[in-house]
Length: 108
Picture: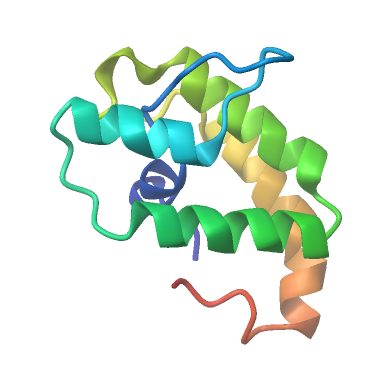
């Protein structure tokens, strides 16, 4: 199950504007760390979600999550989730892949 904490650890709160106006999960992790958030395994979680997005052909949906999280990264440690709609869209996208590859979709 994908939760706000896992997404946050994966992506949240962090944000450096990159070329092409894209936020990367790793940048979001660094930003969260700079703000003092206590999310262990953020980089590993990022890698897992990025691999999952690619394998499930849901990269655009993942990019929307990253963009939203980056745009809302001023308070990376907040438990509020302004990007729930984007995460729900990503979750719906990966669901068929995960139903056929459940071991790949387990949280890291």
